Length: 162
Image (cartoon, rainbow, N blue to C red; front, top):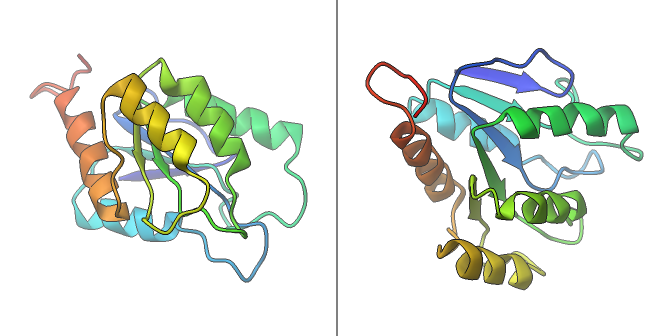
């Protein structure tokens, strides 16, 4: 499994997933992406994971620069699947994730999950069900399993993209 953080070289022609969702804005809030990477690894995922965070810093203590946004956008566009995990609370609202979700909804290459206690997700739930005919997943592991299943179904036995 290859893990690519903001600003690192992208990997072409390999199944890939972008981890979309809220990023902590302070040192006291832990990023959910570390746990996600552990789950992908435990499940034997052999693709690339794009992480829209700086490698040595799992939060942002100031506003994200245009440069960081452009780097994250490049990863988002390169990914085969964009997995949205929305553990939304008052410390991690995921406002940029709302834009990414809407931007990609008609493209259809998204998997969406959120815990039952996530706040203000009703509109995302509604769009995912009505536009894509899917029900959101309620655990990070279930969301990752669905992401891997979707990615695997897009490759044949020789790992060639269909």
